[in-house]
Image 1 (cartoon, rainbow, N blue to C red):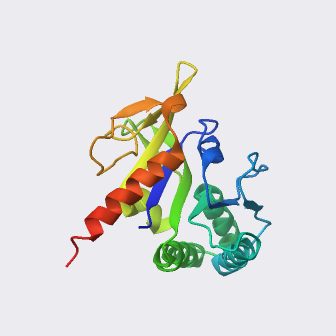
Image 2: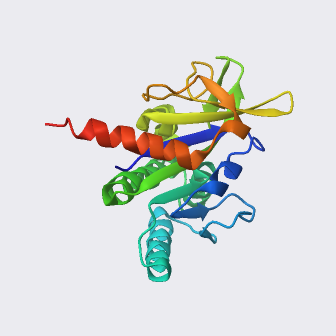
Amino acid sequence: MSVKLLISGESNSGKTSLTKNLKDTLVISYDGKKYPFPVPHVLVPPFDSTAQLTTLINEKIIAYKEKFKVYPKTIVIDTVSKIFDTLLDSCSTKHTGFKVYSELNKEVHEFTEYIQNTLIASDMNVIIISHAIWNKDIAKYELVGKGDFAKRGGFLAETDEAIFLETKASKRIVHFKSTKFPARTLTEGVPDSEPVDEFNLQDYLTLLSDKQTTADKHAI
């Protein structure tokens, strides 16, 4: 069964590097730099609306199917932070005053609906990568987001599974459960945290999918 997983962390924490071992995956790369790993990917060109972006993603999914004869099992969006920044810039160019933010909310809503009602509904896993920043006022990390969606907690509020990457004393740590970090899981047997060197994203995705499949068998 499909899984929606959030990966967040500060810049240069190794978020993109986690994707290097993924299988049957299409990476939607929009992070201001080239995607560095031998995983099928698309470097997203400039866009000015959610509709333009999702049309491109759909085209690349079809291109993946034509090349590999199957649809990708996992879609990685790297990063939603950059996507939301671009949508805000576009709305600021097209509109003025309060309408900038009302239109931005519409664009963000359209994008989140696309993830849930098109990608997840097509039984594709979706890995959402987001930057996070430290908020000293509340002593917690917060996801970089925009508009009302960010105020509601962003993708952390829309996923059951979220991991956070922390750089600590030159070492990278994956957090699965935390009140300090935007990380949580409903999967039994998962530790609170572990070194990145011991973590495999594909194996973790398979674990989450198996858990979801077991849970769905009990749906009435």
